Length: 314
Image 1 (spheres, helix red, strand yellow):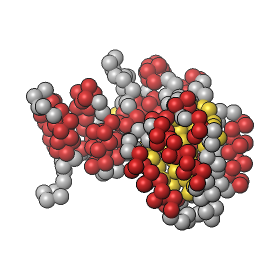
Image 2 (cartoon, helix red, strand yellow; image 1 turned 90 degrees about the vertical axis):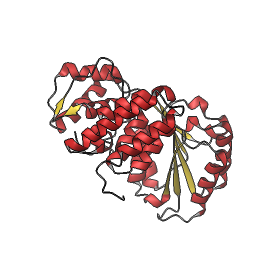
Image 3 (cartoon, one colour; image 1 turned 30 degrees about the vertical axis):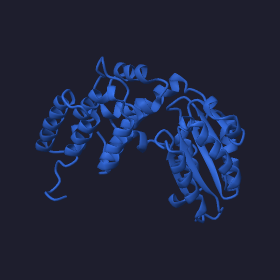
Image 4 (cartoon, helix red, strand yellow; image 1 turned 45 degrees about the vertical axis):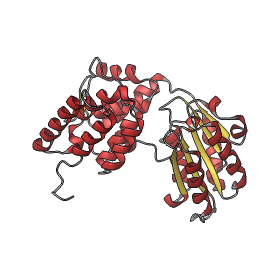
């Protein structure tokens, strides 16, 4: 399994690599890039169809430096006051790029409360000359009309299944993975039309350059777990732990321990380290059925896992 997640490795980096809805969408994006600045944008459609990838591609094509981009995962930003402070503080600083415009990327904007959206409607008008919003969502009807009307919307259609299969096939070939067509189609059937989840499952179940067939009870990896894997592999253990605790529902805790067990390599490459991880996970499962605070027990288990292989005192 590669160190870099396939969903990141194969995120489109050029206009030609992106799968466009149609030629008119590409033409409009090219016009914006030529102008050197974007309007407020809403990217809507089913999960895994390229909304966030397009947002990142736009920033790359415009050569917007990281200091001029604020990424907000709307499902995790629950406090309206904190959200407003973060937005205002970001907008108040000068932009580093020649256009003088900064960008705020709101992922899953349909999970923002109506109050938060109302605040953003005001800010989108007040600071429109110095900051633009790019929002992604699965359900555009959950964006309040007053905000929706201020955004130019691109609707993402579900990928054709043939194109979905072709993209997964191409990536397996590029990675030089041994696989059979029947196994690939099982993954496609489990995840279509979410290409992101498909690539996550293929990546997770590829061992020693061979794709194993999915287990009968295996489900597509949840988006936040895909993000957590990326954080773990980058050594950002605290961020990964906080992400899982903030996103996992109590009825998913047992699945979390199974997830750790299936990804022992996140906590160490040696057999000794993975054996230690296995024991910690076993103890976590046992404690999960005994303790009053299951969240605390899960957090403690992850804290122990991320200490494996660290010298004493670190």
